[in-house]
Length: 428
Image 1: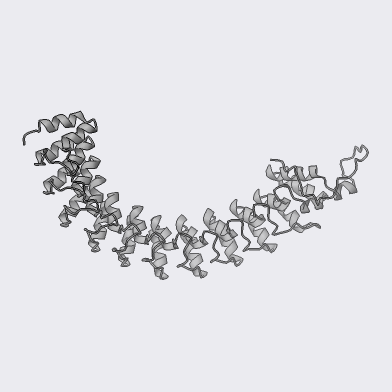
Image 2: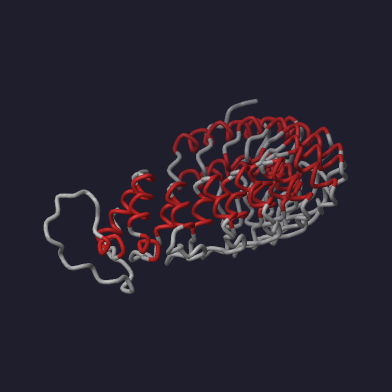
């Protein structure tokens, strides 16, 4: 895009010169650039014509002090596009560009060179004395940006020059947190060696070890543990590294954290433990590891849901079988009176219902509205489950608190196949 509008401080354009067939510009033209000259310079830079841009700057050094309508100087555009020759010319010319000038978006040459991974331009700007701690409108310093974009060489160059390893952006994210997110172990170790703070939290309370755990960067979690990262620290929503690792099925990290004695009993703000999440997700290996670490198989979240209920309603039979072997309470009720069987019946989890019936779960248990598993299955049109429950001895004539039978609930919901089945229940 052409940058047609320039800063009004630009010197007025020179009067038209007489026709001249010689290629060389007149002294007046070389010292008094016009807006069109600046537009052409920007276009050269954007199209990768660095040599042409450098030549133009040599003839018209005053171009270095001009800006477009977005506040971009030639140096900013040259740095953004990696035009090394033009950057050199701008930094060394008689009208030296303002090194740390920022555009209207708050970005300066070093920030943009960093974002676009122009390593040699970054090095040149550093050598010229660019401010390593200048930040854009979101508070990102060059080092934070390099870590966020996972540009290791640029980050190394910035750290070699003494960039602040503990700077944080407006969301509280640091270079260490971004290194943990991206799994950049080289950068993480270098940041730690330079004194990066492992306990720094971002705006939602996440630390580097939490982010590494979430992404299953097990080696980095181990590195952070070695420098005393708090593995039981919690985010604002009360997620710990272990719960995050479980939530995102990061089995390798779960094992690292359990080896470091992470607390398996901590809960999120909704009351879920790591085992609750493992049951809900159906991850058998994580579930087994947590149970081996003495996680409570009957823990309840804020809604009263147990791991068995969470596994049951999500159809995770393998986890359910393990819970039954661990003697978890198969008839526990949540705050609405639902059992695992009721919740599984509502969701149509056939294998779960079959497993619970075989384990002698109570088919007559009712929720706080008097609905048994049969009523819930009938109301939701779960014909196969209705058949299983009837065969298991569920009472087809029982009524809920509103006085409705399972057949009436099915009829009201338009499930005629269920109604037929309930009017002529199968034998045995």
